[in-house]
Length: 136
Image 1: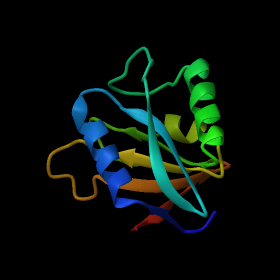
Image 2: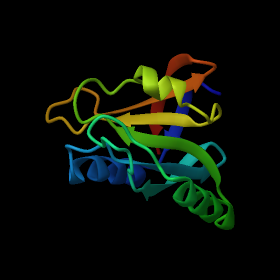
Image 3: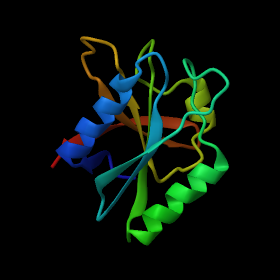
């Protein structure tokens, strides 16, 4: 995976809005696009038992979103979720559950005044590397 990821400005705005919609719960979803540029956010429902500290997308919804991505001629380029409290960097749980090594993992902070409210990471074989986000 390259050391950076490209994303449309409008998609970044969607991510921020999703994280701020209910800042006490982790939001989550998939990111799709083509030619290495994220052009679409697909919000998902967080069904975790404690959505204030983790996220989970039920398999039926995940499969539906993946079909939607393929039907649009796009590819999965990223996965996003928020951290309502604490830093927006991968938690041990995030690293352990990074099942898509070619995807960029975006972690959002809905906290007012966060220095970097949106960050992206490559997580492969439990190794985490921050990605530069290039807004296009």
